[in-house]
Structure formats: C-alpha cells, structure tokens
Image 1 (cartoon, rainbow, N blue to C red):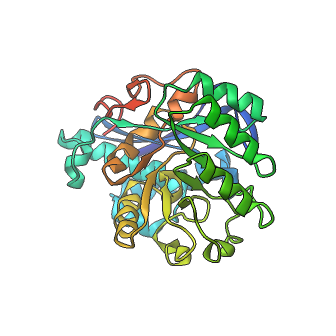
Image 2: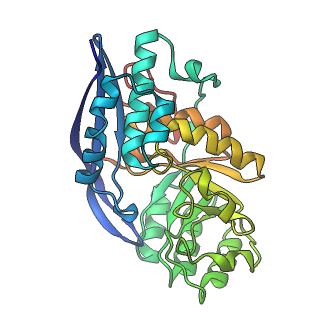
Length: 327
C-alpha cells in the first residue's frame, strides 16, 4: 500500500500563561503529520512560529503539498532537498523516521547510528514578568538545578537579581528573545555576570547583532533566532559562543544532527532547545542531547495537559521516549 499522509491541528492549554518579550499566550497549537504505510504509522509534531512567518495554515499547506511525493517513496534525504528548513519539514522528517522505526522494529537512534539517549537534566523556564513576580517564581522552582529566565530589555538587571535571590543554588540561563538594544546590552551582560549566569540567549535582534563581535562576552552568548540551519553558521563567527538547535528551525532531526556536528567542529557550544510543544515534539530532540552542554526540552512541563503516552519527567530529569510515543 502506498504511503498516505494526513495531518491534524491540536491545541493544548498552557499551565497559567507563557510570556516572553514578544507577548503572552495561554495555549499552543501544534500540527501533527501522520504517515501510514502497510499498517504502520509514523508521527511528527511541529509548532508554527509567527516570528518566522509561519502559521498553522501555511505550515499545513506545505505539509499537504508533499502527499504525492510521499506516496511515491520520498525519503528524509530527498525531503531535505525538496523543502526549506522550518516547522513543516520538521513534522515530515520526524514522521518519516518514526515510520522507519516502526517498520523495522528498531529504535530511531539505532537507525541513525547514535548512542541511545540517557536521562538528562532539562532547563525549566520562568516567564517574563516584574522582578517581584519572577523572584517568586524562582523561589517556587528553586529546587530545580537549571532555570531558563525570560528577559525583556529595560529592567532586566533587576529581574535577574530577583531570580538569583529566589533561586541561589540553581544554574541560570537567560533568554532575551532579541529584546536588548545597543544602549543596554553591556549593562545587562554585566548584571548577568554578577548573578552568575551560565549562558545568554539571543540578546540582540537577528540581523542587528554585529556589535556582539565588538564587545567582551563576560558570559557566553548563544544564537537562537540568528541561526536556523548550517547555512547560517558562517555569519555567527566572532559574535556567538554557542547555538540553540531547535528542530522546528532546522526542519527536522536530519539537519539538526548535521548542524550539531558542524557547530562543535567550529568550537561552538551546543544547546538543544524547543518551541513550546508536547512530548511528541520533544521526543526526537532527545537524540541530540549527547551533543549538548545545555538541554532545554521542558515544553510538556509548562502545559496543563500533555498527550498520551507522555515523556517521563522526574522533577527536571527527562527520560528517553518509549517506542509507543515516538521512534
């Protein structure tokens, strides 16, 4: 039987609200690609991201346009040549790998020649808010070993100081989501150094980050919005010390593996991150964690409900996916 493609759009409520410098939301919408062949079904989840010009409708259209090619035997290597990096390709890439695993009875990491993932510590994200609210959130999460702190520009020294006071023993990552500007970047960097921050994600807007090559980095700086796939690595030289690899940016695990390898060869630290998704979206990214100095795959921890079966978390310890979920 030829492969059949279908997709669903699913919505999941966030536990409370999730706030970054670009806005706040209370639910997520994910697109799930389903590829069926001879009684086996492969699944892949993606999160359309408006920052990159994506919507549920545009991503769904891109996925559906590959139905004939998939029916004719399109594989992951050909998919990477046929589609641009982004959420739509991620859903299909992960669905094809899940299908291959189910058809062969092998785990996805064995198919890819990767070590089996081990339990890892994931960051836990604190939303942007006032220094007082963020300090309280930090106190509630103080037992977690790694916290990721969303920042917003002006007032960030007070925010990060409040978080450090609330969680004195946690390792901290901060993520400005492009909110800093030339006038405050050095003061914010200094505040992060004072608070013992381990990594700063995307302080300046993508395309406006040239000054990062001209100023000291008292804390390592990580590219997120400034990097999607291997094609963007050259532009990072001198500006960034690390990269955040997200499958929805790279267009799937196939490109993400190549990006991780090339980045490490260039001396860049690797972080594995995520959009705000369910366990199905996190599961393929666990195969990259052996490359990573930092893991931020806490999407399901921030939701009011997850899909079944979910990934298993014990506090901030994340366990590899069971075959019934993915791969």
